[in-house]
Image (cartoon, rainbow, N blue to C red; front, side, top):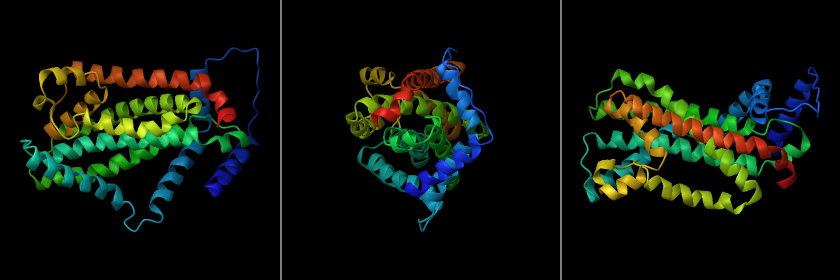
Amino acid sequence: MFKCNATIVTMLKASMKSKVFIYDSSAKQNLMLNELRQIWRYRDLVFFLVRRDLTARYKRSILGVAWTMLNPLGMMVILSIVFSQVFRVKIEGYPAFVLSGLLCWNFFSQVSSAIIYSLVWGGDLYNRIYLPRSAFAISAIGTGLVNIVLSLVPLVLVMIVIHVPIKLTILLVPLVMFLLALFTLGVGLLISTIGIYFTDIVEMYGIVLMAWMYITPVIYPLDILPDKIRQLIQFNPMVYIVDLFRMLVFYGIFPSAQTWIIGAIVSVGAFLVGWYIFTGKSNEFAYRT
């Protein structure tokens, strides 16, 4: 950890030698846009962080990249046995149904948790040198996108083995991945900002994720629920993102314009709220961590 931080500090100092920064305190800046400009200026750092995270994750692993594929497969097998046999869920190609939902959920839960951890507990580096506070969050998104792309390989293989047809709609999956990334980033930034002031929130987030998963149609279809419960679950924003992903991959149908619009509103809305609150408070992070 200390070695990685020292490398980042060295890289930042080297890049700053060739740049001149002029700060005018009288100039009123839009914090949201300024943070985006800083991320673009430090884009090399973001790429370095993504590479560091991927290298650190697979360097000492015997299975390496294969673990990214085997992990969701193992969860799929367990959940498929439990819900198809014990709860009698009758869906043609149920293992692929479960796996398609798990890929979305794993991205959201793992990446949002990584964002929160890096921002809430990264104060030591913030105190040593300037860098955009959102750089670690953006790099977590980049790492998560690489992992979910790798995880699509076992999903396609499972669909082939159990004879679920693969249709051209799967080519539109990057659009849903973009919406998923925006939503995850917004939630991660929002919870991180709250966690800086109330660290108990960080510990509670793991419990919230566990409950959140079971009120999201990851391992079951919505139509098996009673109408009253189904109406309540419609307020869960992850429902729309998981549905978009599953329609394109598992069902092979093009979602309606309304479904796309709702998914976009949910994702962009979460991102804007999280980005606005985060950029408004990010300057205080170094003094509170």
